[in-house]
Length: 483
Image 1 (tube, rainbow, N blue to C red):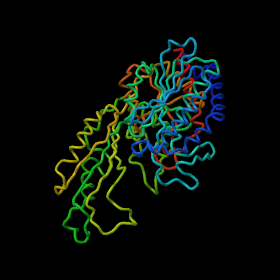
Image 2: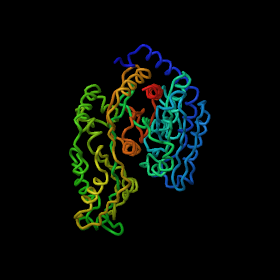
Image 3: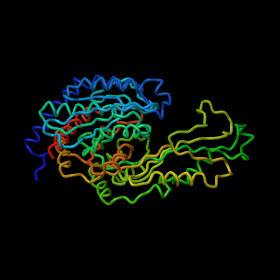
């Protein structure tokens, strides 16, 4: 069968869709997206007073106003609200005439953001959008504010060219950066709206390069928590205590050595490891051979720092199918400018373990807690409090029609066929949907390419990539309606 990616009519159709997408982005998207970047709508995990502060409400208002202004016949927009939980924006778009039996497409994104972080370069900041060439800087544009704009723009482009699409539901949540704790309650309320999607499009993932569409085949889960070590009831003079009172920092270091090899970085908790499927190993080797040094070149290594491994395939597997630990927070130590000679009475460290797909997060979390709390050094007071868990996700086999459509969409939006790879981050909603809708096809993709730096300083949205992804979604929607 000839791929639509190389079919002349398919190329012409794709080029026409892409031209419309580029025009719509320029006319309809850039201004409201830039305004969205100004809103410090932190996810609830980072702003316990999110409701009182009103930033999430402001982001919801901006997005719903924009959605309601789209010229899409039959479009309905509503905001789901449950007391004490973040809202969810739901857009429903009826199928085009003749595609009523094509099922339902669920398109997903989120509007909540990570904290601003320090380290933004001169002239940039988290809450002031800056357009530098074809890159739009600011927190939350690439992760994941662009998603709702891309989804409805893709649908608009299909309709403007007389194309067909199935019934579409666009769902934009506001707690993803906190692990999506509020989403299940909302999903229970709209079970009849979701129905049984035959296609799920998630726009919250990444790209290994900016020259083509990248489709995510797996996502890691998350086991996180706070390790607390207490040796004193209050701080004391370090000269008087040194040599008698055990160091809280040394105990933390010893406990961490139980769960991670400090030399290699390998996680030492067996329950956090899985057997990697041979197909995913082969995928990593193929993609690693194509990308080479580019797999790691997007990280801003300082000085002569080098990766833990130089093998591109192993780098891909390490960030997708193997667990990893990062200490992401520390309470109990003052800033160096304020550090007095005091033996610290207690320390609390925030631990974030990325776990591979097919790993049971509950079993992993329970094993981790037991390892950290068992037989504490010097009988210190040691406790580990788990935070909400998230399972990883492994994509189901891709249907032939979808493989062809992804290539065609990538050619239309970028000029090159699509590629597949695993991602190291977590999208809790995908694990929920994978379990709930095992027969659905999934397109998990996004714009978070090299150096885009989601969650960190200098986050940017690469605009050609955003437009290319939008075009690819439009092509996939048409293919799904006629499959």
